[in-house]
Length: 415
Image 1: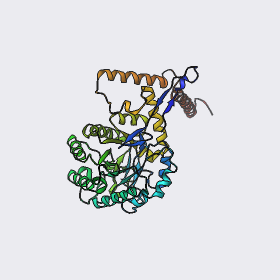
Image 2: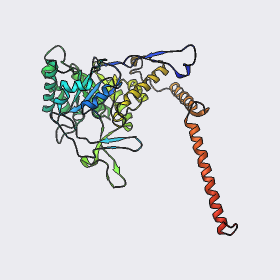
Image 3: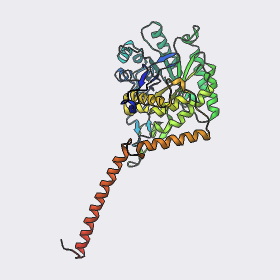
Image 4: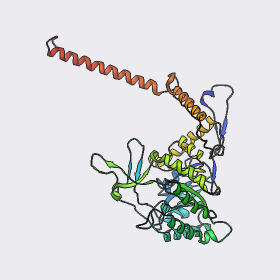
C-alpha cells in the first residue's frame, strides 16, 4: 500500500499539524508486498470470489487455499467451532478445496486479482496427501509459470498436516521432513538453474521444545538454496471442545479432535516466530502466524522477527475487513512510537529490564487514565455509570414493592 500520512485527531483543529508518513510495505522472499499483513491459507480462500475480497482489502498479498491434487470436499459438518467469548476456535475441515488446477488457472487468478493496479502478489499453497502428490503439484505449478500463463509469485508447501497414514505430521517427523525437502530440492524447478524458478515457503506446525526447534531449523537451513521463507504456526493439533449441554464433542469429525487456533495460540506463535528467527539462516524469512487479531498482535509478531504476518482465524470470523482494521491499528501504533516503516522495529525485541518494566507500568497507567480517569476521553465510564444508576433505581423500586406487600400481609397497611 502507499505510505499513509497520519494526522493525530487532537491536532486537527490547530493551525500547525504534525504529520508522519507510515509505510507498511515489506518484501517476502524477495517479493514486494503492499502491506506486511496478509491472509493465511485456509479461511475464506476456497474460491476466486472469496479471494477477490482479500485482494480488494489492505492485505499485502493473496494466498490461496491449501490445494490437493484433485477436488476435495473435506470432513462432515460440523467441522468447526468458535468459543462464545472469541478466545479460541477449532477446525477439522479435512482440507476442502477445488484442486490444484483451479488455483493455478489463469481464469481463477484473473477473477481473484482483477486489474491489480498495485501489483499485489498471488501465492499458492499445496498440501498433498502424499509426497508424490506434492511433487506432482509442484511440477504443474512449474509448467504454468514457465509457459507464462499464470502469474504466481510464490508457493507455500504445507508441512504441518499429516501426509502418510500411521505417521506423524511431516514437521514433527524429522526423518520424513528431511526426505520431503531432499526430493523437492531435486526437482528441475529448483535444481535446473542458478536460482529457483519461484520462491518456496513452508508452513510449519507449532514446536514446544528447544531441541525440536533446533532440529527443524537445521533441516531447513540445509536447503536454504531453495527455501525462501518459513511460516509458523499452523493450528495446535488434537484440541477438544465439549458441548456441555449435549455431553458430546462440539466438532463431529475425528471424534471431536481438531486444530486449535485464535487468540489462545498467540503466545505459542510468538515464541515460534522468535525461536525460528534466531535459528534460521538470515536468507530464510520468517512469517508469523497464529492468534493475530489486532495491530498490537501484528506489532508484537514483527518485533519478534516476522518479515510478514498472516491472519487466519480473525479473517474467518470477521471477514476481509479485518485486514483494513489491523493495518490501521498497526499504523497508529507505529505513529505513536515514532516508527515510519516496519524495518524500524522488526526483530528488535529487547531483553527484560527493570527500566522497561517501569516504562510499561507508566504507559498502562496513562492509558487507563486516558480511557476514564477524567471522564472526558473515555466513553465507557459514563455509560457504565448510567447503567449503574438505572440498576439502582430498579432495585429501589423492587424493594418498595416488596415492603408494601409485606406490610399488607401483616396488616400494617391495607391495599
